Image (cartoon, rainbow, N blue to C red; front, side):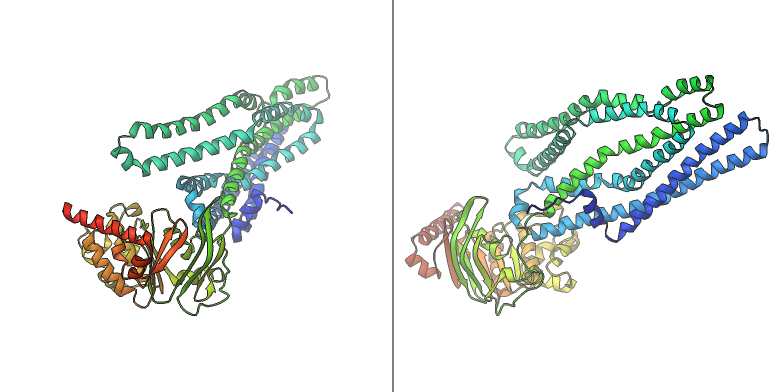
Length: 584
């Protein structure tokens, strides 16, 4: 049976958590605000009646004026308290939405994150969610209370004179018809603005991220054209929508507020023929002025309600993504740190990358995975690191399928260093400390010395307190890589995966890193993905991957003797090293 779609309101109440009561009290106070705003209408009507009846008691008029002033003061007090509560609840909602999205992205397969442009996530989790703050903070109390106000006024209006009450609604009916005209094709029009906004964000992020390549290859004009096109389509989506709605909007704003267009002439006629008293006529005029304001306020929120619904759908689209299949608590504990892959198949979308991979990595051994570009080496590493789930087959650590381990327990087991690890816009010290948040400064310094990056860190402007910039942009590729390795080593995990982790290092520093890694991973299970075969030739076991299959495995000498592909790769590597030496 198809799951029933939840409403935006139910999601918002869930995200509000314990602050739901704040919304309830906000509505109660908003209703109080409306009541005290209505009271002056009745008092003024009474004042006019007294005046027409010839009353000249100043004290009575003064008391009425004081009551009007008190009503407005109390109404504003209620409004202030109402919006204060609704804002507190709303900020809790926004925080919980963002927290839910961040937690979700940590549990979904990496493929979903990689397939979605970063500009889309940024747009939803920052701008789009932020854009509903004002609406949520005001719409809950004010939408509810402003619906109540015209109902109360109309009831009293009909009790005073039902004829003028009906006539006062004629401009309102015209307004409603104009509003319905504006709502023609509302959904596709709004969805188009959402789509073009996303495309503009994605184009902007892509342009900024690729600016170095664009400048280097002189592609500024052609690359900027994509951004310009996205900006023009974004603007056109709004302008065309506004043009179509402009006439209806003009009618709505010009005709709807003027209830006196019908109340004044017909009321005067009723007074003239004696079917309406002067005092009742004055009361009807005042009441008619109080009907439209709240209705227009309510109408102004309808577009925002649509916006909230669309944004909630976008957020739910993230929250509904399939997660890595892991239990809350591990159902079994690994007996050691060995790794076994049995008939593992995996593919991106419809294309299968790995075709039944079988591997056995003994605990405490150094294991290398090599092969041509695109053969599936890094995919195997990412599957072992649980960044994706296998399509079929199994991956076991110490005899336990990783799908039986909780993500918390699994993450304690693995330290993963990729070719292009991300550094946060923090200090060097805090980036390394992410490997172990409880690590002391002395432990951080010690691990940098062992991993061979202490000296270059001390040469930075502020040493360990140097801000590395967004994504580590203030550092070179090799420096970022060495800090990433230090961070992984500080984690002190029993299984370490180095996925082209030394790709950005020069030969001198690579030798330092190799020696440091050899010391730091002693007794641990190490998996190394490498193109430079000379860095892994002393591994306990080398797996050769070719077109998603394990072509061979063994030691360096065994593979040279038995695997033509490995021998070919080794000869090419040695030839490249000899050529590099000659060039130097």
